[in-house]
Structure formats: C-alpha cells, structure tokens
Image 1: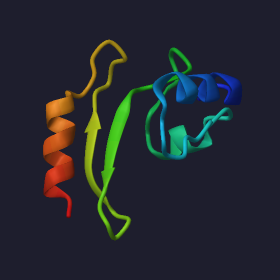
Image 2: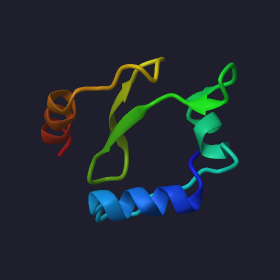
Image 3: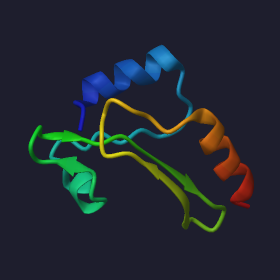
Length: 81
C-alpha cells in the first residue's frame, strides 16, 4: 500500500531484484484479506509461490508488530518445488 516512490526507495535501498507492486488503492491487499480497516494498513504477509505459479505457503500474522521468521520462509521455499 506504499506509494510508488516509497516502494522504489526501498527497492533501491535493499537492492531488490524482483518486481515490487505498489498497491496504493489497497485493491490487492483487500482481495488477499490483508487489509486492517481499523488502522487502514496492510497486515504483513509472505507468500511462497511454486514453479507452477500456485501459492505453496502463506505466512501471515494479524499484527504488524510480529513477522514470519526467515527460517519459516526458507523451509517453505525449500519444500515448494
């Protein structure tokens, strides 16, 4: 839901080498059930997509104060072949 400018600044800062979406109108955020209407923010989520393009794993916590661990993401990525 960040602005395009904020997203691009983060891409540059982190040297991200994959496409990054700016969902400024929260359409995708709402479609994925990640919109927190009380705070008008997106809940953090991580998706692992398998080679066929299907969602193989979803890491989601209903609070912005916690995040899915890197270890959990790496395990899911290794399992998604």
